[in-house]
Image 1 (cartoon, rainbow over the protein chains, first blue to last red):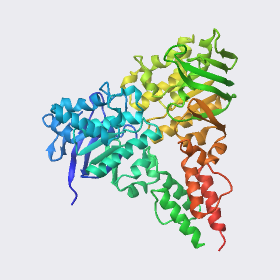
Image 2 (image 1 turned 60 degrees about the horizontal axis):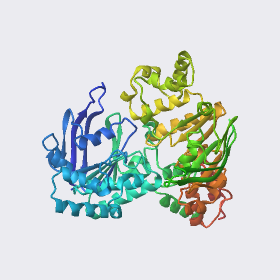
Image 3 (image 1 turned 60 degrees about the vertical axis):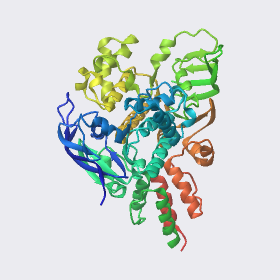
Image 4 (image 1 turned 45 degrees about the vertical axis):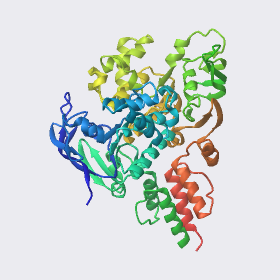
Length: 279
Length: 288
């Protein structure tokens, strides 16, 4: 039985100046140790979901449970220790004047004793491979490095869940790779639960599970294989399908019978090799 | 509008202890109607090159020719305003530059600044909004009440309303969802064709470079290291990989398939359609 660490029950939310609900009657669970990708077009409600999970906004209806605690204004500080968030813009979330100050900032806010703080700052910077940059100023860092420092800031609070809110969308391909690899290694090492809100379908293809949001509702939930077999339906939702699936669709249209949907290029290449060796 | 960068060099804070060479000996020709993609790592000098295209930076060596205007190093340069009117730059995250009370005021600010009448500017604002896929109802709204995607489009409309002859696009779709990305890129491309513009796109997306550009220029450490058509550039995969750059997915796929099957297809294919046809033919025609 999978253990649910976050659970949304009938959650609805509306921004003050808007007449449409940003989220309407949303229900889902997030399970311990999984990598969950939440995808959807701009305005589908995925970023609002992230804000609700971290208590930046509170739902008008329904409730959110994080590690068995009901999320409200009372419990918010307790919950933010369990659930850390990395935002989109590397420049907007760097608050310290040096790398180590930046990581210490969150710890100070939580009143962690100094000795423990020093240890945690170095320890978490080591985990994201930024421990050689302790006294560097942010403008000397690349976007990917800044995001890794942001992750260290989150890690220092020792959360069990980490949310990436389009955390790689402003980075170049190299920075994107750095950040995702860092998070992937941490997930393995610490058994973190990762919630990634993303437009990057190639990244989502590597998740354990995907939730597709559309117009404030959960549209579909399933394994990458299940979600990407929706093909054109995804495109209608303003999304895209991974390259290997587009490629296999093109082969099928030309009369090459492939047995399934391929989420990786490697699988597809192997299948074509088998096909080739049979004729 | 023909654009030509001739052996340009740029040093930041020249003649100070903080002097730093950003680009050197950069020569790029962009004849009217050409779509050029500029690729390279962060810090390779792409942005510095961009800023020469409308004389935001003046070269410390060499000459920049923009239409009938010449900007030469070490000379007093006049008519920069005319150049800026002809060259529209869409910077990264252009929505950060929105500032007016209403969308309409924001869009007409640029054209009016260059002496276009208010009436004409408002007409242009309507046309530009339509081009970027927004409706007129938005004109009276505050740009800050819009969604991120809408703000991006309004900011782009502000550049289009200048009716430039040359479009310079610095990662114009970063952060948009896949549909938004495609809509905006297709819009720029049809505008490029319709108005016979000169277009320069700075991008990390090899997919976009392969799909839209006539010419690709690769920069590394402040220099141009390679120029050519997408087919020429993407035919030498290993060279790009050595530079730490990506290749389009379809090219990468073709290479891994060739290695696995131990064969070589006759050409490099830049679209899924072309590659799947070639492979299907191979699989059908393979000897028993």
